[in-house]
Image (cartoon, rainbow, N blue to C red; front, side, top):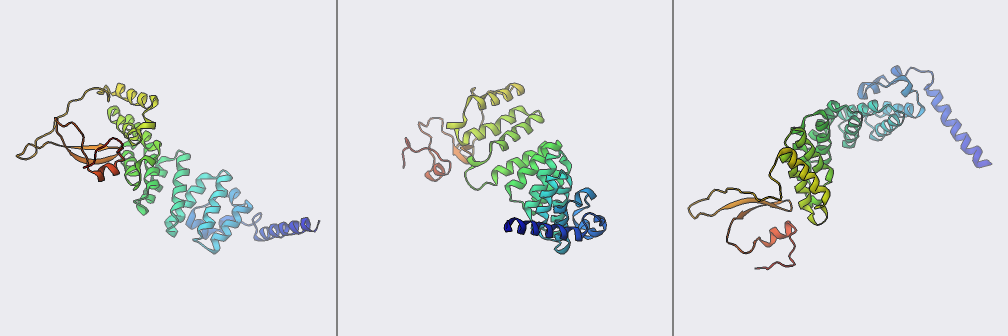
Length: 287
């Protein structure tokens, strides 16, 4: 009984405090004029929500409080004011310089709103502040994709893969699928097979399935391409006076320069390259 009364008293005190602040009677455009100048205006109905009002008061006292802007954006999102949430996060970073997570959330919201031009604008700022951030590149690629700028999107998708310092196998399949779709949107169906083939090459044991083979075959059919299973002819120029033929190749996503020997019985690679490319050594011969 005492505990229930105590909790009720605390709740009443909190509500009384909010009421004293005037969330029901004061004009939020006047009360939070300085806050709106930094994060953008809010609809009166949104500002009068008690939780939103409290966060606005916090930002009035501490203009660059990162927790307050994050909490405010979450409340606005829950209340259905998603654009205001994204605008607030984006404007906050432009005025306060941080955090990058706010840009991540802003871009994601703009994409959900299908406002791709605004998503690209926010993503450009994200990449400018974090050029080596994989997520920044991927989100901008998605925004550019939605805006129809497929060539720039392809560059960002490619950078997303290359920026991973570890095992490329860990890159999500969605990156490769989006690359393939972007090529297809440009009517470059033969090029669309390359990302899928690369994704499969990182783990052929589990990824070379009937599903991936069909995706590749469909692109090859649309582009009237040479099938990946058909015999191909390629020409390689002779380098120097010794007639050594070299070719750039990629094994399991690892690039290297190889000497082409049509009479060789074995494929030879250095142990360091084999380790990096994760070439199975069960049946290999070391020298």
